[in-house]
Amino acid sequence: MFALRLYCIILFLLFSASSLFSNTLKGVVQDEFGPVVGATVSFAGLNAVTNEEGAFQFSNLDRGSFELEVRFIGYRTYRELVQVSEPLQDVSIELVPDQLGLSSVTVTAGRNPVERRCMERILN
Image (cartoon, rainbow, N blue to C red; front, side, top):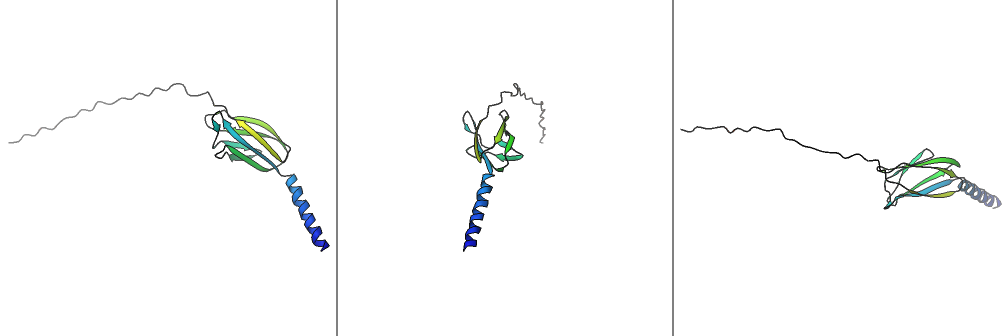
């Protein structure tokens, strides 16, 4: 009976200790109108894509400083150095639209002249 209790206590301590070293980074990506769906988020060699709420999450991270990078078409790339030091960290990111668009584009169309001839029929 004592051995079973000791075994349960050791298992509990092992799982508790492992959760202390398991760090998670989660966050939300937004623009001026609300959540950005489908943005690519890179952190500590891992990649994720934001969901319908603009949320992302990275789990089982080591402690240290890593670059967080968020990319989405039509927006400037967001970069920030994030220090992973707590078991759960939240970040909120606002993407800025990229003002470097194309200059005006003019589309013109032309038509080649087509000559049509009707065949004449002579009936007797």
